[in-house]
Length: 117
Image 1: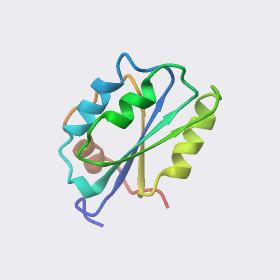
Image 2: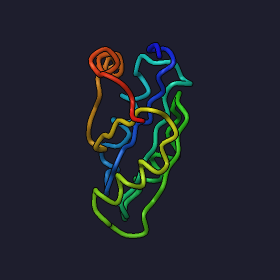
Image 3: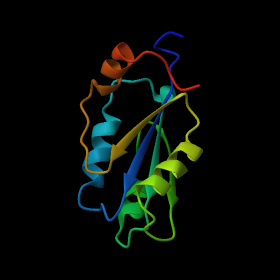
């Protein structure tokens, strides 16, 4: 499989992240990857702020989807839901306060052995 064929699900786990989620999403939108090779999934761990509204109203170049847990259930439950929702071969987990480099995906592709089975 060449790097042009690799598809990555970026799973963002968040809880009450309205103060920095936009910055994280804007950084993801600047990644140097073809649109069809990325999906962005936001799993909200029962926030009581406007995090979900921010995710839903942010325009991304990539396909996106969101799931909100009814109550704060912890990172393990949120990550499991992200894995369940992910449709692509690779999964990259990010905390919602992480601002990624434009070259992150390129670096990962050239240093990683192979995608999940």
